[in-house]
Image 1 (tube, rainbow, N blue to C red):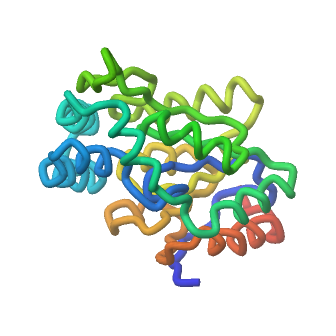
Image 2 (image 1 turned 180 degrees about the vertical axis):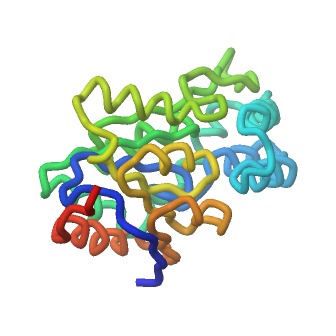
Length: 230
């Protein structure tokens, strides 16, 4: 496993593991796949890179990217995302987490036309995503949902923790983008998965292989280590 780590911060037993979707649980950026189908790949990909590197306000980048999808048929959108693959190792990692008695969550600013499939295929416990607005069979260039603004992921994270009785210190977060940093800061332990250096520096550990099975030994080590002194 190719990884680097910082000091620990989590108790020796986690109860919830929270994942990003795009480029974490799936091997693609959904918005880029949709933009390609809409003929706006270059424009949207540039904005995505800026947003994921923290070089553009997320609220602004979200609105701009979704606007490029206006006029794309829902049928073509579904065809574009149907080819997206689950990230290698994701099923094994989710199965391992569930075998410990812990829960899994996916908090994504991506869209339910992919998130719903990921939820079913991986048997995730809690899933939050956005929804593209469709009118007369065409995307309107708008979206609805709780995850369209800067740090909205943090608010949803808080919602899950409060409603299901977790402590933030009992949570592990796995993600790759700048909009996951707010989760890294709240969780007991954070894992940057194939993330840019600007994101890695906020995580406890960084994994550089595109295989989520690499996360399993990290979680096993968390379980086996004594709690960090307070």
